[in-house]
Structure formats: C-alpha cells, structure tokens
Amino acid sequence: MITYVLAIILAAAAQAPARDSLLAEGVRLAAMEPAAALARFETLLSRDSTDAAANWRAAVALNDVAQPLTASGERTRRDSLYARAEGYARRAVRLAPNDARALFSLGLVLGNLALSRGVRERVRMATEIRDLALRALAADSTHDGAHHLLGRWNYEIMRLSGVSRFIARSILGGGVFGKASWEEARRELERAVELDPTRIYHRLDLARVYVARKEVGAARRELRKLAELPDKFAADPSYRRQAAELRARVDGSQP
Figure 1 (cartoon, rainbow, N blue to C red):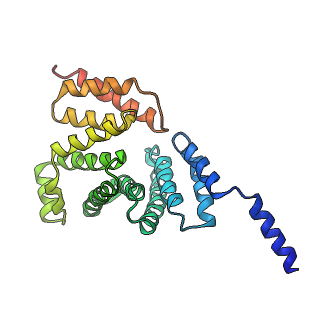
Figure 2 (figure 1 turned 60 degrees about the vertical axis):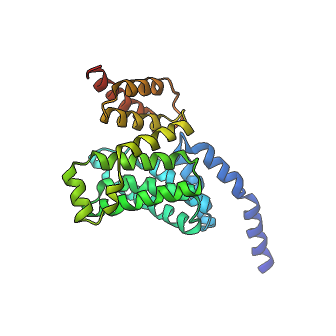
Figure 3 (figure 1 turned 60 degrees about the horizontal axis):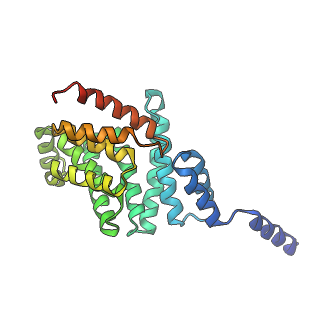
C-alpha cells in the first residue's frame, strides 16, 4: 500500500510543471496579463511559500490587478488585493532582505495601499516607502523602478502644502519629509527614464514634475516622446489617457 501511494505521489510530481518553467511562464505573462501571471506565481507558492522570487512577483502581479479597480464599488476588492500583495512582498523582503526587486515590490504596494489609509498611517507608510527605495538602490543602483519610487516619493511630498509638511514632520512623526525636494524628484525620475526610456509611466511622472515646476517646454517634450511609445504593460492605456489629459492642460497654459 505504501509503495502504491508513493508511486502516485511521484507520478503527480513528474506531471507538475517544473519550478523554473512555471516561473518563466509567469514572467512572460506578467506585463500584459497580470492575473494569469499571478496564477502561476501562486501555484509555485502553494508548493513552496519560501520562494522569494515567486513572492515578490506575486506581489507585483496583485498590485497590477488591483490598480485599475478605481470605481467606488470596487474599493473593497481592491484593498483586499493590495493587502494580499503586501503579505507576499513582506515575506519576500524577509526571505531576501537585500534583493532590490523584493524591496521595490513592497514599496510599490505600500504606495498604492496608503491611498486608502488615514493621515497618520500614510505618514508612517511614506517613511517606510522612502527607506525601501533607498535600500533597493543600495542593492542595485540600476533598478529603474526604485529610482521612480524615490522620485515619486519626493514629488508627492513636495506637492503637499507647507502646513501639511510641517504637521507631518512635527506632529505625526514624519521627520524624513524634510528631506524631500523638487530637485530630487526630478533627478530620480530622469534617472528612471534614462534606465528604461521605453516605460510610459516613467515619462508620465517626469512630465508631472516638469509641469509642477512650470517647465512647460520640457513637459511637452516628454509627453511627445511618451505618445510615440508602444504599450508594454497592462496599465499603459490608462497612463496614456492620463498623459493626454496632462498634455491638454499643458497646451492650454502659457508657452
């Protein structure tokens, strides 16, 4: 009987896709079909929850599935997906604390998850996001996503009113907010574009910084280049629409 059961187990194992092939299939699907990619990564995690790559890739895929859910009736599902993504990303960081991709995945998820949190919690999460971006860049200075994450962090902090930044620094424990600057926002996003000039999202956020700094010519140039890029990721059509709206605002401003 034991021999028979063992034979069944071995046969099932032989029929299951190998870890590397399943991971490769998920990676291939991740850009344009994040839900399908997620299924592959979660299959791997059902076999081995300590697979660091499967964890951070599952976190990013969940983030990408959740991001388009912007309608009010979709909020509960969206927040549930982000919470699952945070769990995977935190596990990935525990398993691989010096892996830039794992660190970035957690920062990415927290940035979206923070949007539905209270002010004090958002300040705490913003502080963690900056730390994760810096750790990711210390591990891999060529990680374009980490440069974007840090640039976006500076942009979002600098968009706050002076009063809001003061309250965050002095009352809510966000002392690190004082380190934010427009120069850092620009530098980090320009570096992200330099590392991956084909990424629509990099150019969109760089254009936003230029607009905020009233560098209209630079913003127009960036948005023109963005419009010429092909879609590479599932979220690109949404980013393209946001870029078109920004371009209309820019074209309506002074030269």
